[in-house]
Length: 499
Image (cartoon, rainbow, N blue to C red; front, side, top):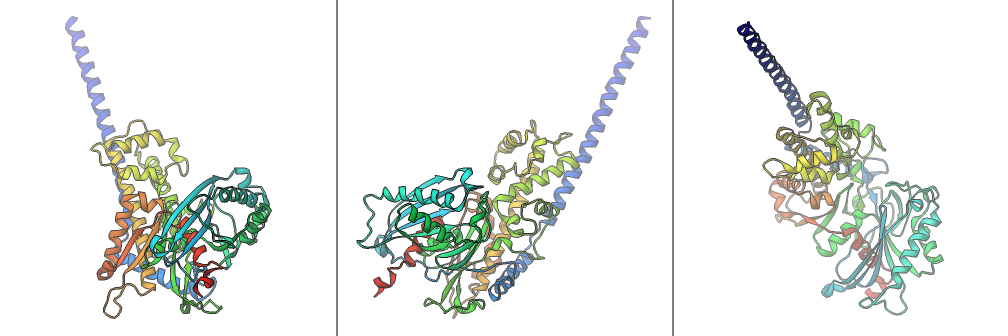
């Protein structure tokens, strides 16, 4: 009897062991099958995001064609190609005290700059940042918003101290960076087309924003003339040109993206005014709205666009800017989790929250060089609440970061090459290379090292022999200082000084 019990026990134990082995084998087979799906989704995404040199050259050519069309007539292209009325960029000769006001988000900045001409350049500059209360940004009135700004500006002007000198009998002058869609009417006037970035004050739409600011400054007892109304990209171009006379264009690569460049005035068919003395005009491209059949748009991009606040618009921006790169990553990860069990049988609920993955988090994961990809693991845990990610999972995340970022950097480079080609700077002039500098501002370019390196390498690849003469230069805070410099180059006293 004892032998029988032992025999049965052994058989039962063997059966249990065998059952566990079968279960483990099935799980391994399932995991292997699921992992095959993950890799298939990754390969499919890589192929659809592909940007070979031939395709990028087509994108660059399409950008150039659209630039021509946008300059020919209003509405002739997806690119607005807005005339900025800036026909005098800073030269470095500017002298005197100038102010800048930079409004483009939940904070605005006031700044003063003392310029000392060619020798002393920027002698001194001071900045103050002011947070705009939510009740002023939305639902208030034009008067409330601009009174708030004018009061802060008046307080800042009152603290003007040593090192800042306004010549006797002169009015203070200001450059106004206003980074919202505006129909520019002259160098110092423009009507608001629509609010973005969380602002919603209906009675400002259709009004001249410089006129509204001027009335508020008058109410605040502030005697300041707005000499120039510009957007941040034009300001960056001005700041870049002040530091380097070879600057021909400026590009913003941050949360959003845009480009501005110096065009020959006679090459703007839609310009009906007198040709400026400089024979040049700065064009604000609004290039985020660029669209071409050559752009590698995936289903993830299409879904992001459909669910966005501006469907059908800013397609290029949605593929290359900091606002969207992390969101594209989230969408691909979500599909992999749901359809291929990327995180085993667990689909993190946080992964379904739009924009929970920010591009700075994506950059941190992409830059992770630790053997076990510890930063990736921590980000997945802290942001998406994935408690135990494997190295295999983390590697997939890094590969996705690389695909998305490379595509964004490649397309950004192609856009810049499109501008270079439009200006004929991609070829030799009289057998000589023309040095051309592109001033770039924005956190995406400045802080996402792999994005920046990829962009610069792609430029070299696309430009070939001309690459040596095209330089990409970081222009830190170009827009703020740039607005003050444009106030100087468009000062009411410039002609008096020249005579």
